[in-house]
Amino acid sequence: MLNVLYIGLAIPYNQSLIKKARKLNGRWDSKLRLWLFKHSSAAEAKIKLEFDIKDEIVFSQPPDKKIRKAPKEYLDKLERKRYSPNTIKTYLSLFE
Image (cartoon, rainbow, N blue to C red; front, side, top):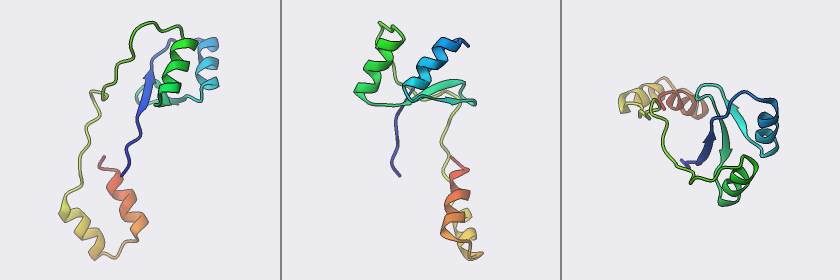
């Protein structure tokens, strides 16, 4: 499974700031309450320029998001019940 890094940006509710975030292909994550941008050095530079950020961008995991792996027994049960590979993949993703 490939992990994609994102830059999360918390901004106050302001139409001009929201337009800037959309212009940079950001997407709103309602659970994290952040604007998310796919990470790249070019994206980081554009965000700093557009939002006038002078500090270094710090990367971290959200504190409340802990990844849990599904128990092996659960996977075995889904396979015994002959669930389709796509269904198994979806059910296992709910553990993360």
